Structures are given as C-alpha cells and as structure tokens.
View 1 (spheres, rainbow, N blue to C red):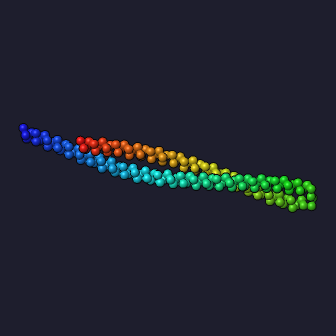
View 2: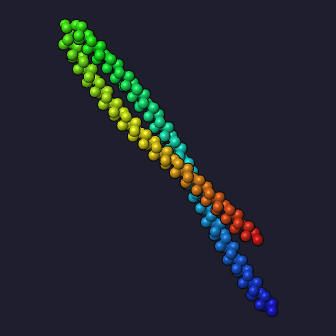
View 3: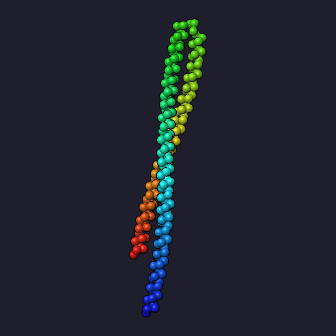
Length: 169
C-alpha cells in the first residue's frame, strides 16, 4: 500500500513540477511580450511626438503661405489701382501716352506673375493641408494602436497575476 501511495505521490509531484515548468515558461513568455509591447509603446510615443511636431511645422508653413498669399493679393490690388490711375492720366495727358502704355504693360506682366504665384501658393496650401490631414490621421491611428497595446499589457499582467496565484496555490 505504501508503494502505491508513494507512486501516486510521485506522479502527483511530477504533474505539479510539469505545471510549475509550464507556468514558468508562460511567465517568461509574458515578460518577453510585455518588454516588446513596452518598447513598441515607447517607439509609437516617439513617433506620435514626431508627427505632432511635423503637423505643427506644417501648420506654421501653411500660415506663412497664407500670409504670403495675402501680401500678394494686396500687391495685386495695389497694382490694379495703379493701372486705373495710369489709364486716367492717359486721357488727361496726351504727351505721356507712350510712357503710360509701357508701364501698363509692365504692370500687367507683374499682375500675371502675381496671379501665377498666387495659384502656385494655393496649390501648395492645398498640398500641405492634405499632408496635415494625413499626418493627423496617422496620429489618430497611432493613438489607437497605443491604446490597444496598453490593453494587451493589462491583459498580460492579469494573466501573469493569475498564473502567479495558481503557482502559489
């Protein structure tokens, strides 16, 4: 009878040792996964900060472009007013007709250049606006990924606590 009891106890002891080894392996795996997840969270946090800085820089560039656009528009308006004044002077002073025509042509060229530059700036503004929207979208995606990783870490901690509790028992 003691031999049977001894064998039974040995078998139980082996099962407990196998369970202990399996739990230790699971604990080690959970610690490794936790380390990987923590590193990933850190990397994502750095990337989020980089994207935020990039978005701020893009906003600054957009504001600068808007300011340039306003300056160009005001210059365009000033040039248009100047053209009108030149046309009025043309009617009143026949002696200066040729000079006024040359100035009007020059002003029209500048006006076209400013119109072209305004169009280019509007295209750049649209491009930067799209890039800012894309960066913001990436930022939101990264934030969601960080949340998911945090949840995973929480679940792994819970599993680790459960395994430790089972191990203690």
